[in-house]
Amino acid sequence: MYKVCGTYHQLASLIVAGILSTGILVSCAPSGSSLQSIHDVPTTAVQSGSAQTPNVAANGSNPSAAPAFAVGQSSVAGAPTLASSSNLASPASTDLPHGIIVSGTGTISAPPDEAFVTAGVQTRATTAQEAQGQNNQTMQAVISALKGMGIPDKDIQTSGISLYPVIGQNQNVTGYNASNNVTVIVENVDQTGAVLDAAVKAGANTASNVRFGFKDDTAVRNKALAAAAADARTKADALARALGLKVTGIESVSEASTSSPVPLPVASTAAGAAAAVPVEPGELSVSARVTIVFSF
Image (cartoon, rainbow, N blue to C red; front, side):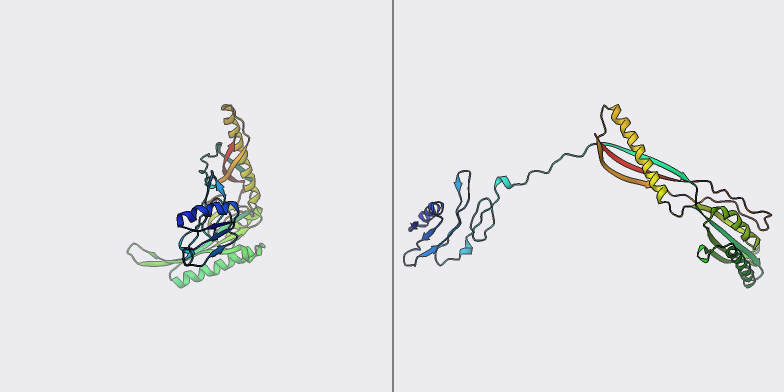
């Protein structure tokens, strides 16, 4: 044990020796003050041959006024820790991923499994009420004919209604046109022509378009993506061979785009057609494009 008395310079010097040797410190306050003991003061770490010691306040002073010091992971009286050079963060790595970046495309064709038919009725009369009344009557007959083919209500949807005046050469109203269109989902594509024929026989005199699609294109899209990935790998292997390299893995993959079938318009069907409308569904194509970074 060390007993420390005298000036503050002497006090600081003896504190170091006392802490390092015993870890127990007894301090003497200035003349006229009572002695103050500090027990179990933690010994600070020593680095690079030097020792750091906590500040000790004189009796009667505010201990929090002078911050305590510590080295490494040690701290005294809740003071902030001073980081050693070994704890400093190293600069972020500037290494960038390298690889062969290629894009691949794939296209898969398959027959459609549903069709969309749009048919309508257009009427003309002297008055708006007369034109609309005739149109309503004829369109109801068309809808009844479609339902008679077994098409459920959920697959018949009105897609457009209009009523407008017909203007003559002298800017006079000469009559009114009324129109009503429905779009029908045909779940059996082989019935597409028959649906159009039934609508025409019931009074439909306009057919705007027929288009085909897939009830669920997930399988076709996945095949297109697989074909696009295979195309990208083929390109990467060709580039690697040309450069004397060898593909060893994949760094990243991203889907660039996937196209869906586009509606195919057909010629308008006139009322009174003699036979069922010939319709050929053909095949629909789904394309996909991917970008892949191959490592070497």
